Length: 233
Image (cartoon, rainbow, N blue to C red; front, side, top):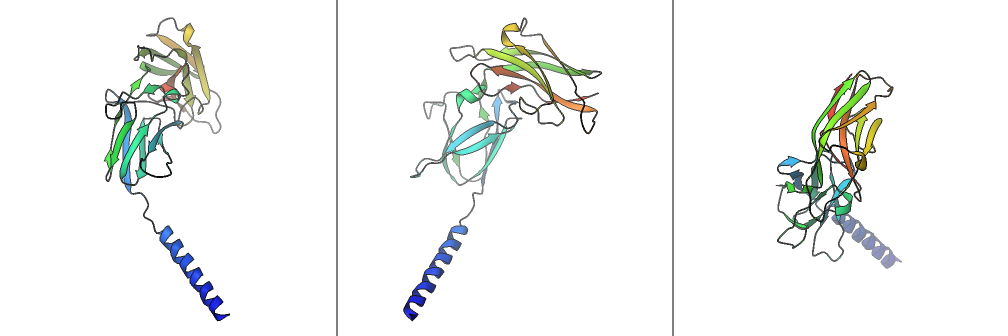
């Protein structure tokens, strides 16, 4: 009976020590941060749906790390030191990663040895150009142009352009209180587009909204946008 109790105590001690050792593993401390840029300018993207995938080769069980990209094109992640492959799912985002000579693909190699800042050059299919958003009484007016950047076999058609407004400074297709759209086939002059939307009643009341214009491309999940502007009224 004493032997059984001794073995039980030893087993519990081993489990506790093992649990403590597991809990005491160091958390990742190396910070990867940067922005998605085109010709040095950050892209304006969807507020919460754009992700990149990081994969660390060499582990028996490989799990991707989703890295969120915010609406200003910025991203950050805490990682263990190591060599990673960065991958962006093409059909979900309004841009392409350029060909990488090291991987012979659009996958990017990222070496993490302590904190690292990496701006990733990408190529948008389209850009919003010269967006001017103003208020007239309770109406928001946007004038802007769109520029096709990718013109080869990878080019995309414009499905629609949309003006979005919201109470807060997160503005996107799924974060809005008002919108106005124009189908791509109805755009007469891509350099001179006008969209107008009414400002709805807000509770609690406020004397401003935030606004920006987005381009939705055929076959691409998320939009590319102009910069967010605060509109007082």
